[in-house]
Figure 1 (tube, rainbow, N blue to C red):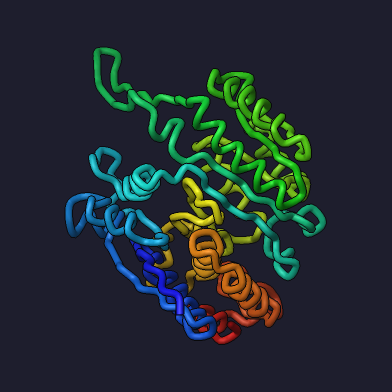
Figure 2 (cartoon, rainbow, N blue to C red):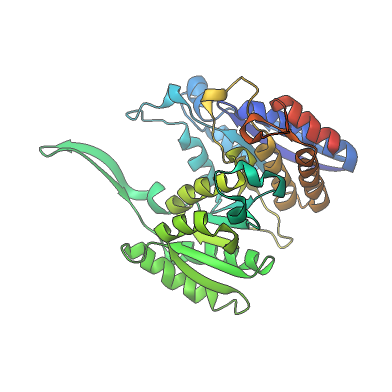
Length: 362
């Protein structure tokens, strides 16, 4: 029997609801595959602000570093939305990524054939869509200095600094090319090289890294063109790699290709061991969804699929990850849906029932 320590950070809003379903499914994995998952649980985000006055405690980071992986729910909500606040729930996820050295965010975007009719795009546009967006996590506008607000005679002012180093771009591009080698061997690097100096650097470095992978095709897109083509020809993309803010925006857009953010898992990764594993943070991309908290409407599949990514990428449990993904596909094929992906002829179930169906299928 293998034992793995996992840190659970349910967070705010629907985070605790979907986390409960993910651990339910992981419990079935334990029994079927004879593993033991030992959980620690920590408050963060708004829940931690209420309890401790900070979004991310040093104790939480220490527990994360002692774990094989972090399973993360969601943070934020109207209660903590004051723009003048010095501490915000989002500080938790940004701080965790930074302190764990998680520089690569992987967001797979696959349109399930049975959900082609659930997107606002035409099925013939969506058919065959299967991509991974890789977002750089620790540089760019979110972390550059100076970052401040002030008031002077001209009124209120604000500045954020967009900064990237060659090293940061090189390491994220290597992740993209290595992943592309396992897929359809195509990388699209996204920048704003026509306006931004950092974009010019990004394109230059991505081109240099690409020369080390002659078997992989590299093309470049400006971020505005990429946003358009995600809606116009999404099936043409294989691996997209881009900087922090562009990746944040594009992946939320790409989520709607699958019909709902409730179907979209993600992984934030740092340096890997020789066997390809390493600590990672795994989270659904849907956020805290305060408008449906406590109503049983939340789709837990993104959280469950994030747990599958955790098994594969941090614990090295490929068969177990594939079993979860197969169970999710089986439940969808059975016609079961949460409200966000419900359609004609389907059976609408609540959050807990969906988690139970996946666990039983597993």
